[in-house]
Amino acid sequence: MSYTYEFPRPALTVDCVVFGLDDRDLKVLFIRRGIPPFADRWALPGGFVRMDESLEEAARRELLEETGVEQVFLEQLYTFGDVKRDPRDRVVTVAYYALINLSEHNIHAATDAKDAAWFPVADPPKLAFDHDRILATALARLKGKVRYEPIGFELLPQKFTLSQLQKLYETILEQPLDKRNFRKKILGMQLLVELDELQSDVPHRAARLYQFDEHKYAQLKQKGFNFEL
Image (cartoon, rainbow, N blue to C red; front, side, top):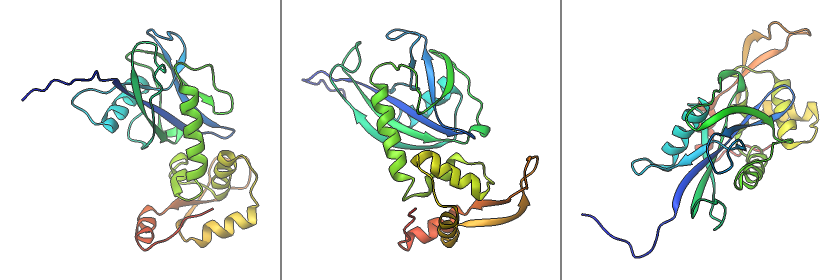
């Protein structure tokens, strides 16, 4: 059965803030728009939601189509609906943020994106639409949530050192952490599996490698465990 609606309906889009971490910076992924409005301007990956897909399906499809990124941690962030946020029409966007390990994903632009590239979060280019506001909201969410949920491990390789883990938190939180206290607290949670492996191909003394025990964390969380750094 078909219906008619008394009121006009706004268009619906999704936008994705994809964070990655390298040896120096927290990075964010942008695409260069190939079509108006804001042609040639950098923007967050995203696009219009199709009638036959959910919001998350749309977000994952746009990420794959515009950047080649797939199979990543993705979480809904916020809805942005300022009346004039899009010069084309009345458009409401649902934003998501994603966390990926840079070494595991090769990005490439496709569909209506002319290019895709990583930029330091601290020095983004001039962005289209209200994407600077969306980025700021995602960064605030990441800084807050990384303290009470172990989402930061999504930014690391599967096997990592304690120094890499500490560097991750220092980079996101933008503050130094006491090495002794950090290691005591993170190891005391008993969520890291110490491996019988050391770093390879490093110019300094090789450090011990660890893995995050997702299964154990899920079990502890059901019992009321509180992850807090």
